Length: 133
Image 1 (cartoon, rainbow, N blue to C red):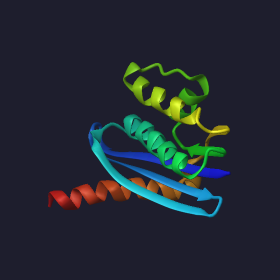
Image 2 (cartoon, one colour):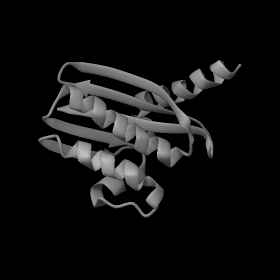
Image 3 (tube, rainbow, N blue to C red):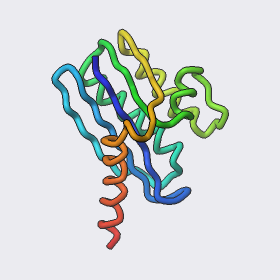
Image 4 (cartoon, rainbow, N blue to C red):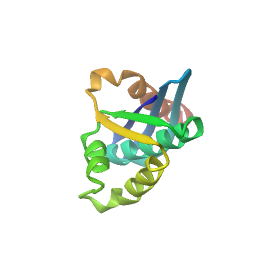
């Protein structure tokens, strides 16, 4: 089973943004820190989910368990519905990717247990800040 930890971060609303993905299990140790277009935190969280699922799909078609500290992302995936339509394209893409796995789970976790993905997302913002200097 792959465990996919995801996080999105924004320095402002909207502001400089980044995503962090940490994948472990089945001999994998993948860490992704990517700057994204300036956006708000919820968009960043959904983009991290999509990116994490894309990367996981390169590694397995088996069992994937996503861990996120975003209640909006977790509840949206569980209910297959978003209240705010601006997140609908991200949800549609994430659901489509999730359907490619034999088993897919998503679970909310506390910020304190999502430190690696959080650090990766914040590093992506710092990369952008340094480029602007």
